[in-house]
Image 1 (spheres, rainbow over the protein chains, first blue to last red):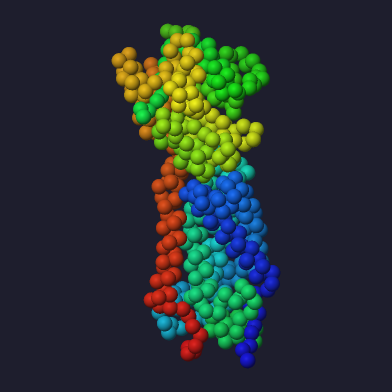
Image 2: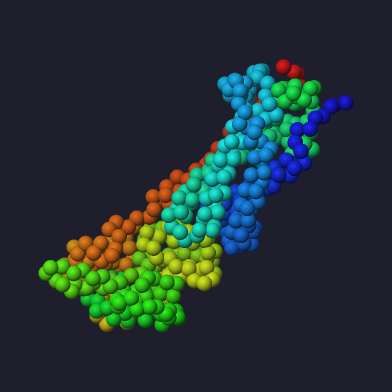
Length: 200
Length: 250
């Protein structure tokens, strides 16, 4: 029988779903506003209600994003030689049979992605709140509008790759978002350091 | 249809403010209580209930101690309008076939981005957080009438007509270059200034904010190109290299 170990707590899973759900709503309504998509506004009722949904999804997004700080920030800030090596080998993603150094509970790529997400997420949320709550204050709104759109462009590139790497590219990963557990053998290959620390 | 415009000639203006009153009458805008600040200029700025106003500029000099300039101020009805570019709600701000920048309060979502996009600080918001500004009496001009301000102006300081004809007329009268002739694709409100525009309280070179242009030209297309690129890269990786499977061992 396959032996499983717990990789994510219930709180972590729920928080990640809130983050993902709010991001999805924000991104599609964002595209709706960016290109004035009437059909998108029809799905949400109108441009008025789409604005309300966009703004309040932003509130959910920033709360969930700050929640991730407790889950991932400490490990994302701990870098070692193995992380550098991991990047030198592109995480083993560019060819078959490449052996990457043992990784912690999240690998070097995930650490970098997390730091990127945290920064761009804070930028897009903070600038969004300025556009929302300081409406009409010209200089503040102009710089926030710029930052909001730069962060948006970066996120709509990064998040699809994150989803790909967490599903199709690594079979068996998505179950972490559902059950929070992974097979020990699966974890040994991807998160050797962490598994060793747990004593398996 | 020929683009319509207003030609403002401050030298002809007597500062009677009939235009302000006519505008309020036609657009059914209530009066606002203000305080006397020792100047005829009143109210001191455009408001949601004041689409146009006369700016009184005192320019005393040694040769002319009492030089007093009267400048009609309102939405400039830009050809390339920053407010329309930045507005996220289709139809809230729009161009009429005469070239006026008009608005539809029902479609306005109250985000106030147009305030940031306007080079002239024109858009105002009413108590329901809806856009409120001069629309060149788009309801009147659609019927072939002139805007209320131009209609009522007793001296011809505010002239309404085909934009090209107004420019030709002003050139004949000796104005080589009108303010707004070429700015922002050509403004819908032209000024026949005898002196530097700055003297009349105008921006020397009006422009849509750089950040808005950069957003429009680069960031907007990059959003869907980036998204499509990321999805394509993932698909290509899946086909060309494939997922990390567990079978087989190291």
